Image (tube, helix red, strand yellow):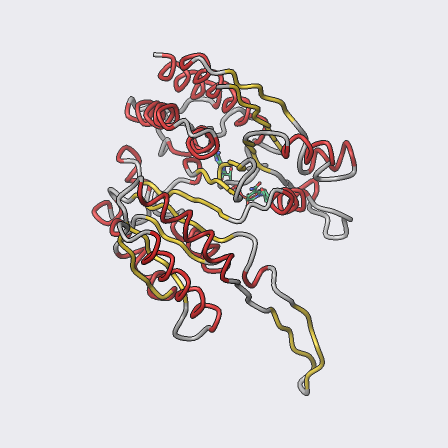
Length: 357
Ligand code: NAD
């Protein structure tokens, strides 16, 4: 296969982990006979420094012309001045908008080798394997908002809006994914209170019943879901929800495996390239020291192969290589629990060696 992959290293540890991610993709290309053309483009704080813009037009053009995008992270104290005209994070929001990336996928999987790192009891978290679909371009984050006069001073409002089409497209993506997993979708809403959730539930139920009768489907209220995620995370397969609920639930769920350095995510649109990244930030406290954990970036690269390039076997090879490397006892400092640790590039060497056989 020929594929054009854009690399957006970004700031802080971004360049360190994306360099290793590129090596992993090269190892896959070489093992399976693919031709991945990879090109680097600026985004975030470094792009502000060099071009006065966190997302230069040339980066947007390169992303739009690509098959898939692998991002490191953006941001850092250097660009934190509240009076600054623009911020690195604006680049991230803009690329999601430009590419119409309406679905954020976040797999939450515990690793047997690291289950002790979870703040929850092993018997509760071991075996957890959830795939979240969070709607990313609608809901209360994008509705009309503002302030107006009020007898007590002023009042503020934010509208939560979802249309039939917005709900249908994300529910379909979730249902399609469930078919390749355990075949179960849980939709999370607040239909006992919010009108927008009542439409969400009505549309989700129709899509699931009419188009995916083979996929098991249930509905959970968001407040109950907060509880179930902590009490019985293993009982969920695919979870689909709106922007606000997804934001909060996925962050809570990211604590189940116990380590930020192992969690990837994908942002997808209807067509065009997907954007893949680790969920962690630019970790300025450890940037430049060569100790960042690159595994979340490798798992993001696996998602890129699976979702954008439809290379399932290749994706599984990366996931198996990460699992084998952890099983062999190799750890970067963040997951070493005080034991001996290896560097970012040594972790890259080991995973590349596993892939290359
Ligand atoms: P962070 O995720 O960067 O770091 C939190 C802690 O986790 C730090 O101690 C860090 O050293 C550690 N950590 C994170 N990733 C790691 C890795 N791969 N290996 C080892 N340790 C790792 O969160 P933060 O400190 O709140 O944010 C730092 C900057 O990143 C901020 O400017 C923030 O706005 C930005 N940020 C960017 C993104 C993104 O680009 N998608 C996401 C979150 C935060």
